Image 1 (cartoon, rainbow, N blue to C red):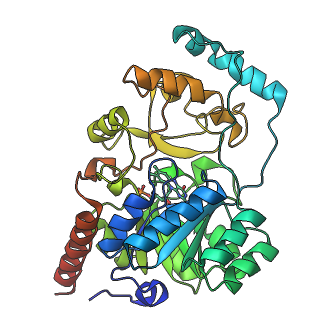
Image 2 (image 1 turned 120 degrees about the vertical axis):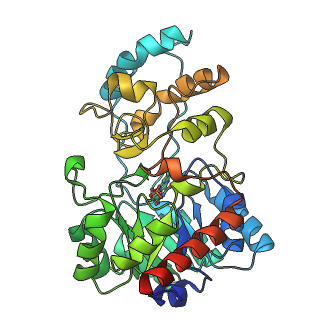
Length: 358
Ligand SMILES: Cc1cc2nc3c(=O)[nH]c(=O)nc-3n(C[C@H](O)[C@H](O)[C@H](O)COP(=O)(O)O)c2cc1C
């Protein structure tokens, strides 16, 4: 028995486990597999057009009868500053030269866009059971429409102050994203990455501060981590990194190898890849110019100049400029179909919880 059943009631899933939305490395396939295994499947929409998001949800609905979570970014969009972009390109010029690329050639802008009215209309059309937000919440008017569509709203907090803000502004459950977590830090009321608490310290303090259920995230990758999250007062877990090597993820060959070889000390928080702090396995550019640079262009513009570098380097089988987003528990990830992994995670957690109770 799960010690806390609030998430099961809220999401109507078999297990209190959320497959983390992971923009850029997954699509409907991983959502479907995790949902078939009993988790809440999350579709990352930050890098999708409205049409693509609609198509993906339709694929999910055709293949599995389970609740679905659509995930969006809520950053305040900032225009690219040509001067800063030029300085960034200059900084990366030696890499362009090394790969025989023309730094002056036009590049497609980074394709990450915050939640907007068009996506909100899609939510009203598709009515996903759950909508989750990263980097805060959308404007009140849009959030009211999401709630009116009947969606449960969950959002990421990296410090207690953010959790309180999210609860006051309408979140039905809060994801406590500890510093161990892979991917972008969901921080939105703070900018200091050095002050970000780890999952073990964050979860109980957040549980004490808010009434809504807290979902622990960051560094949880097996039954022990899930049981620990419940011991800390969480009502469930959101897990990303542990699913990266599932066959249904879209992590490409060389990145898959880098993840498989990564150890406990392989990751770092960096802002050079996109302009926002995110945790990933340290790649060459993070090591050589970062991991943190105050003059990286703001999110998501820092990513634009990496497009050609990433493509050229990956053609050579390298991940020098590839985002290898992953959390500190990357070593615990397993190469296993996601449905099977979900059931294994839940089974191991329940066994450990019952042993702890006995
Ligand atoms: C590859 C990758 C991509 C991510 N992309 C997103 C995203 O698009 N939206 C989001 O809310 N969180 C994203 N995250 C963060 C996860 O929601 C979650 O906080 C994290 O995976 C939990 O820590 P763990 O990776 O240690 O399990 C991403 C994480 C990873 C590893």
